[in-house]
Amino acid sequence: MKVQNTRLFNSGVISVGAAFLALIAGAGALLADGERVAPVRDPVVKKECGACHIVYPAALLPAQSWRAMMAGLKDHFGDNAELDEATTRRIADYLVAGAASERKRRIAPAALRITEQPWWTRKHEKRGRVSTRALAKAGAKSKSECKACHEGAEQGVFEDEN
Image (cartoon, rainbow, N blue to C red):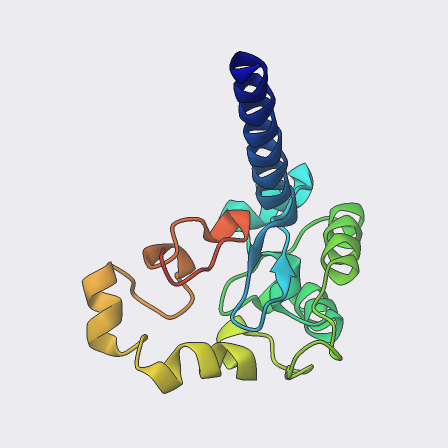
């Protein structure tokens, strides 16, 4: 009887552990306010956006910001990032579909930079985490280099432990 109970217990622990890992891998991570952030899964978005910078999860900006950004790729933060019409539309559609909900957290719909979002400022600047000294220590040249402090940024992982 003891062997049978041990097997049942072990298989239950393994099942619960596997389910938990699947949930974490599929759902992304939690932002400071508890919102889940899914990593970018579209290969075209990964390829085109990732050619120049990290692939930012769509939920970090509202739809209005993504639309404006994709409409202005000729001057994308000082660079020409223009793409053909079909690729631009595909990326824009993907980002808008996964965009942050204005009802879920305080956001600035017109801001094109993630670092201009009120939730980002609350999480980072008000806690002194992105001072020039802190950025230099992490090896980042700007606040937009999420991977300097958050190794799993492209997978949607932005927890403090990282």
